[in-house]
Picture 1 (tube, rainbow over the protein chains, first blue to last red):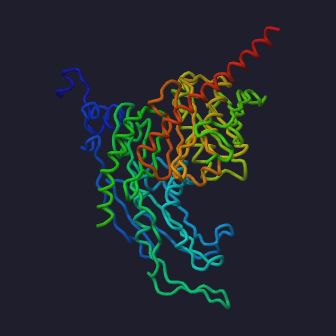
Picture 2: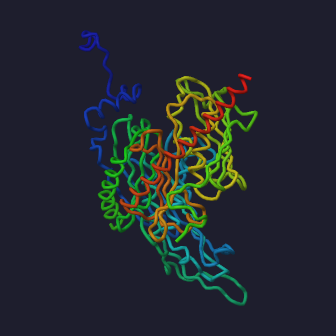
Length: 278
Length: 226
């Protein structure tokens, strides 16, 4: 008879406990002011960025944040500009959360989470780039960039990782020199790597999640996200000005806490800045 | 400098609402803030699809249709925002294994649509008699190019604004925003100013909602009594 049976208590291996009582398992850590990953509540995961990871794309980057991995690839095509904005190019963003990255996602059309992330990133990035720098010839040809942000491995907080991946890929973007033959209207691409995109501001995201209605943690992983009742995204620009504050979910994150999170986002900003420059 | 519609900076556009306009829905509301207007119908609690069924609570589904064209990612984004604002305020555990369906139809978007959609959905949920923990309302404000903070901006003002802020609050809890979406370029003092403007505006919207519900209930009891 084992020790545990004698005392009348049932004991599990840690992994078994985690599987059958995931919430209770996380709570054991949170009540002790610690997290399963060993991070502090206010601690983000380390960022690793590799720029130019896809050779065939005009711009690309891979971002690893703990076990979350996002790849962003930007393809450039030439097309006609919108009649209303003859000098502006296009930038479309698409976040892909496929069943490959997590069992939470089903095959088929993009999930709501993916669509909301795509749309939100698009809203943030559009005013952050100078779309007129994508103009080849006014009223005739402009660049259309399509940024595909693919999740390779899902372990929470994909929005932060996706924004950083997109910013890194945009920094990495090099467009070929293009000539338009005025007689025939044929567009001819010259040598690779001539023109760079005008970036107005870079974006530095920081997400905080309210776990189990009680604990505000930075950069929640997948298991913590399952217990999240509210999340707060703070995005800063190069000057440390706020670009976006986005609180979702009904959990209570008070006005003062939001102010504290904005301050914490500034610290995270320098971490991301450092990762982007290496 | 006067605003396009000559309102004061903290003045909201005229609020109008009609409750129970749709006869086939369990509850409905038409909510308009000036020229921005939204119709919302609530169906529920009804039988849930097997996939959506939750054992311990009702499943809340929001469908949003734009005024023009078919729903795109923009509408999906707003749909998620509306749902996340309410989801936990609906006492879903009272109706386990059911579905509460909220259909939001945009009639006209003349600025501050997000707040209008949230307000319309709230009124429709009340009209449908879906049990709620509290009332929630939203308001938008914008920081213009010259630094003025204006409440309930029209599309024209949003276009040239430095930042746009939408906040939702539950009744009587101005220190705990339910939903925040601040976008543009802004600093903490500007954010704080917008917070204050929206919190005050939400108070007025909630008072309006209350009187709208009260007048409907009074009318109904008179009809029943006669």
